[in-house]
Length: 200
Image (tube, rainbow, N blue to C red):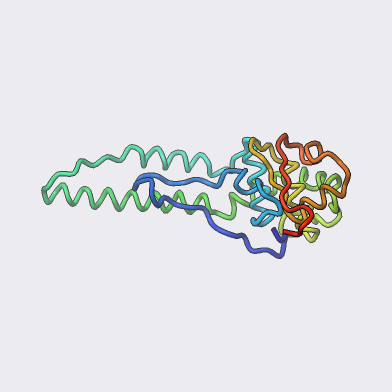
């Protein structure tokens, strides 16, 4: 995670192996925040924190409607010219709807809406985590100019994660050097250390 200077790594995955009518959603919050330092940008981390607490972007309703429409498309394979035409037309409609869902899920407005909603709480969390500096937060995720590891720790503190958080390298060292309980500092029940002293 590199704060304002990062480029967001990865994109939402579309269906590849689950069949033609399956559209995959955003990554689970634990996939984004489960290992620190995080590989994702600050907006993506804060959006994951927001989703972990049950928040959704305003496009979520449209996504649900499109997915319901996708689920309702059925074409019986029949070896007739007219039936083939209907299959082709339905396939085209499915692709169009899938592309729309992917566009909505990847829409910067959605990842930005959730991140900005979490930003006041993120700024407060920066005052608690090691090396955190609320004055570096600026007015929004794009203005953050502080330490990226502190940003990841603060994002985890604002989240409600079910799974473990693995602290590696600099993130692990920061927590150990703080002398504070990692569970209370990050507000998560399962914190695991890896490579805290060897720099990996």
